[in-house]
Length: 171
Image (cartoon, rainbow, N blue to C red):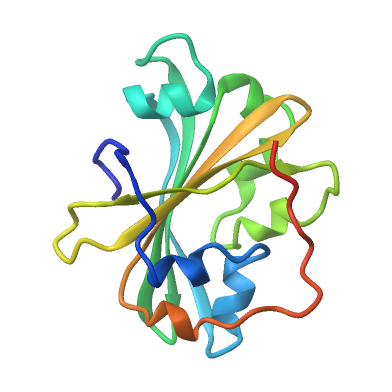
């Protein structure tokens, strides 16, 4: 689904304003419609060079656990997401990733106040309509969970702010 390598780029204004909001993306999408998660893939893959670097692996080609989903709002695809962690991460603090199924990743990320999130990185992806994308890394018990999200088919400035959001602390 997101088969290309991550190539950081300067933020794309004004589209990234909504993309920079802290808190649950799924909850923001649900403010204006019904949200569904379609599981596209969940299992083992080999880390691409950009993924290995983001996870802090010494070299690419190591096995990592990957979950890919399409998040839709009112039946229209809104976000293509790829989440990945190391072997230690999937057997440790991120083990719940294996059993999420069609539930949003937010059900894992909003349950433990010890989770920390890195700053966002942005990119333009060559996916036909060239949607903007963001990537960040969540940390729990020293284990990374990298989340990449490509935003498709949405007027992102209209995605609302949630009141009283938990603010992630950047590492």
